Length: 165
Image 1 (cartoon, one colour):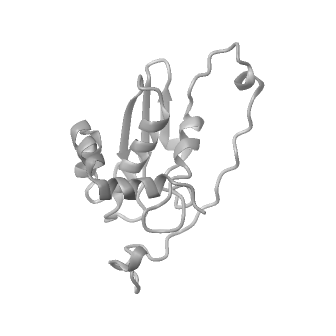
Image 2 (cartoon, rainbow, N blue to C red; image 1 turned 180 degrees about the vertical axis):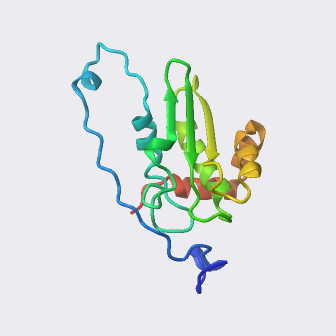
């Protein structure tokens, strides 16, 4: 573990006490096509990125976008086939929060998208020591459902999804 002091809530020391902070991308301009109620509204990569960019990191008072954990280039949407794939990159290779971050992304998308979408949330290949195990957990619907039945874990996920004050 890295970091001299206790983590959030006075717990264990922070794993990555001094993460790099990245500039937030600007807000997406709304196009005339998007405002036209007569045209079908397809979901694209940027719309998914806009949903997940403001998710709070569980360890730092920063968003996943500010930590470069999520990037628009790592979001792939096929609206016609109803698929969404999101790769996320933990800030360090041994990040113990990787599963929680992935779960937060998945829950945000499950709560925001129509049920027709099949979600694939996984770690960017080669960026985490336990990427296979974490990806396996995130892909297992029963494990995700069981995790969300744990009231403490659900509370932590909801904190990650809540707006910062």
